[in-house]
Image (cartoon, rainbow, N blue to C red; front, side, top):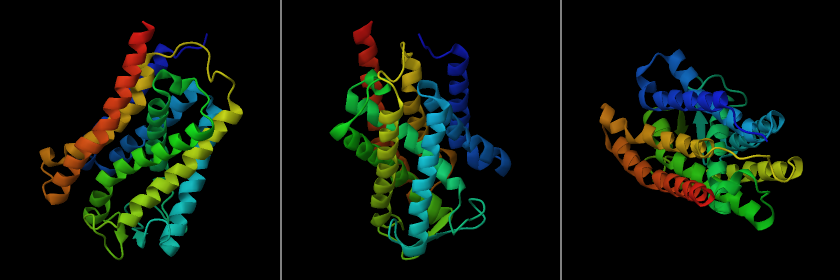
Length: 277
């Protein structure tokens, strides 16, 4: 029987705590420390994914996300087709390759993974998210729901990172605090594509069931906890003195649209645990 070791679970919780510190206090820390803490969410996603699948699958999924999101960003920065007309700063997000910062692909992976696992829970109705092979129409629905969940995060984050912080610039502005609506549909499409490919990867590479043995409820809820951390990182900004209409509006938005799927995911997993008890 394959179980999640106590040491692995503790490591994942430590990574979540570090991600929370990054989300809440990152802007007050030295740049180097803030960067390292921010990457804890990526480490969490890879380790958590590898724990219930295999390391080879987790890194293959990372490769899929990197390739699809980089291609989407490359097309976007050169043509405006995927997200609208924008360009990245060549200093705030690291070096650019083809006018795209490769570091941002890691963010696609972390938010994509937690959104994907929450979508699997919502589609399967609970703990089967970690055991069932999701095929056919459910495969498509899971990928689409993943795109919507990831875009909820971008809705609350993009105006701060672009309009206020200038990490990227929208050349034509936009109706949503300077961000064009085009951007969010591009997010849904990009995440949908790589989530669909990851779903196909799991169907073709994993045996049935996807693992042997029982997974702890604490392990299964961890992706939703990281998604909640993304919401908290936006919600606390006005409380930490970062005032202004955008900060207040994004805090309000995050407290509603990002909290709802977290509550639904946790409710399904806890209900399933109680049913099996």
